[in-house]
Length: 321
View 1 (tube, helix red, strand yellow):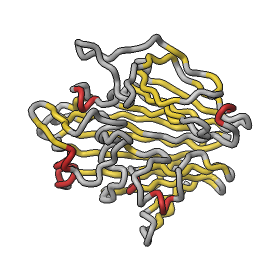
View 2 (cartoon, helix red, strand yellow):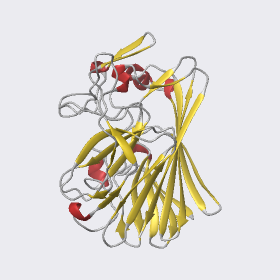
View 3 (tube, helix red, strand yellow):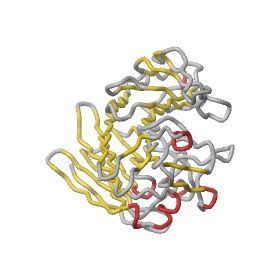
View 4 (cartoon, helix red, strand yellow):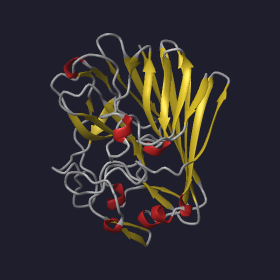
């Protein structure tokens, strides 16, 4: 296992190649959201970027496995309030927004000032990025909750492929930090039509969404759930953009192709929410781990990291052919 660092150059950001064996490796691009942008196994690319990396970096598009921090998915509007602290995101330049103008996917999709370390440890290679949030006035203006963020990717070989593990850690400083962060993995197990891809999920509790993709709440402010459902089976004609409560104690999903390509996504118990996403005719599936439901920062339903404490969550992705 070894590392190759590719310095930034005109049109391309700094890249880190983690090489497990000839024909097997991965690439992490910190400036794309500590993004695992590529996993290649014997000539097969198992993640999806919508466009070439050089063009991708000049947009706010998502692809690979990007970090969505401090919130995943969309908010109900520009006002975020917690424990007497309020911010109006309308004043934040360059904020990613959805088709309805709602703030989308946090603040770090193209943040390029990570404090980085990387190395190897036996049969593993790792890269770690850290942000001391108060050191960046722009970040504090958009999310005025001082904390230290640490993201660590570790890659190792497994039978038939590669395994990538991500640690997501937040250290709150002098005040509590509300979080609704998540990740958005675009998992593509191999050739085959949308209809032929096979999905595996545990039994999930779907959340009712309105026509803007926002969770529906009752008069008491509680989420409205549908009947429990296991979404396993061929994608067929199905398409997904749906929020679910995941099982307590952690969860595992998988997507596989007819030729034997398979990707398993396993999240620990600190990721209790799961967005499924696969639009019509897509050759990928997204199992999106989330710390809190969509719009949690708007609804007062975020995960709260108490002042002076550290919160950590992790997930593992196994890519095999």
